[in-house]
Image (cartoon, rainbow, N blue to C red):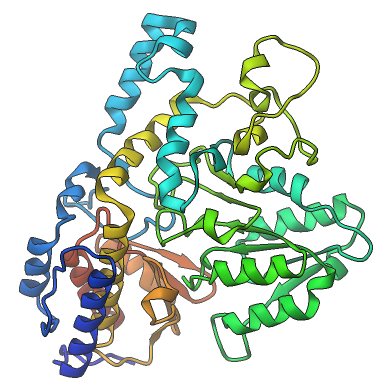
Length: 460
């Protein structure tokens, strides 16, 4: 079925969208780019005017965009999978290579940013992005490795309290990790893995259903391991409510923040989960397979008796080079480190974090809501049974991502968009995901995407 061939001038939708964007900027206490009473329009001139008013627009020039076959910048909407490369990465790497060549082992102590504390500087820059104290953050390993290290400490099942609560639609690696942990402890996933599922006919979980299940089964739940944001639907979860409900029942609480870190507001220290882990290659632009991040709440900072898999980089820094046989964990999240960090692999993350420090999460979140609302508005201008948006419409319940359920030939549609220079991604069996990332995407990107999307729907 073909969609309507013209853009509707839906005044009501325009007013609602303008109000969403205005409220978003007001709540973030930053200068709005949409004045009260303004309405959005389905025109390239309007998108260009929005970009001209955007106080964050200049950050776009600090990233490299993949090129189309015509040597133009692609419409890159895949930051939820892999963030773009900051142009400063090359100079950061060159600096490290020069220091290695000139200083050799002395770079650990005499480099511009001494390698001995390189990861600590990145943890300090990361902490504000997740609402944590610096000592609660460690930059180490990769995401699933960190989840296993955290579960070694915080999943201690007993015959009475042995279940792990996750989403049935959690990222597969979380499924693999939790099932393997359950088996490692001598239990069976069939009886020890408790999965949250949406109500029949719905795509997203209801917050009240999550809390109700914790209240009902909490006595048998040893660990709650939730994603901060569902990777398929784009739904943001109420992590504060989940933490509160879990702790009331004596459950350990941890979060996989792969799609939430540097995307949505987080206050991990205040909310109080036991731990969290995330990758740094999506919204944090650290590069493919980048070293990941980990959070351990400060109430565990001195918990040297917690079981853990130890390694020398987690040993007390004052004794580390004494090479003694006994392990004395560092205070805070650093006490869960195992191996010394790969300095060259951290350089891209450093380049990105410096940009985040300039832009500020408050302003980025405001623009993110405006961009996704604009995309929602444009897609709503042509009623079409071939697709639907499954991401929650309420701005506070979503991040930078929108997910579309494509009812016919979705994989073919994704390929047509890629041929037209639009980079999003496909999740079988029927989901197309795209993310207008506020650090480097523009309103014109969103407008051009919507136009090309409808064109692809109509083209055989």
